[in-house]
Length: 173
Image (tube, rainbow, N blue to C red):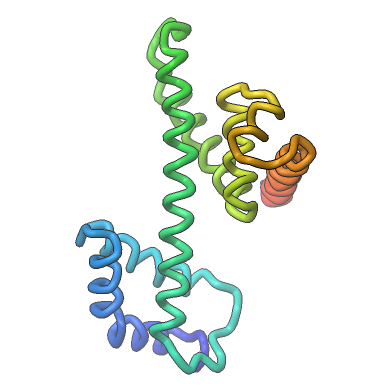
């Protein structure tokens, strides 16, 4: 198998319906499942890797779809933490943010989600608790159940990922 339009077209025709049903059962929503099916095939089209030697296309599709579901959950957690923080600080806001400000906020959240996608869930949680909720390293360590040194390591890892993403973005601007 290789990455050419005919292969991807055939992969879509052969497995789209099955993948939709599988995702619908997992997600409980036909609409969300349909969106994720499309995202899965877009991911296949965007991948730089050649699709040689795939013996189990359904397993390959499930892996991509599962990873996309995990990314979606992580992004929603970070977005919700941000929105919760905004809700708590609402009294500080003089006015509703302009559409431009709202777009910048959404873009910033998306960039943070991208940067944190490759770190552990504990590191993500430590990042949100420290930078969005203002907890100290000690407070975070108690909540997560690790040492303060580990919290420092988690936060450093997250900041490095943010820096790496920023450098990559600057290269393409």
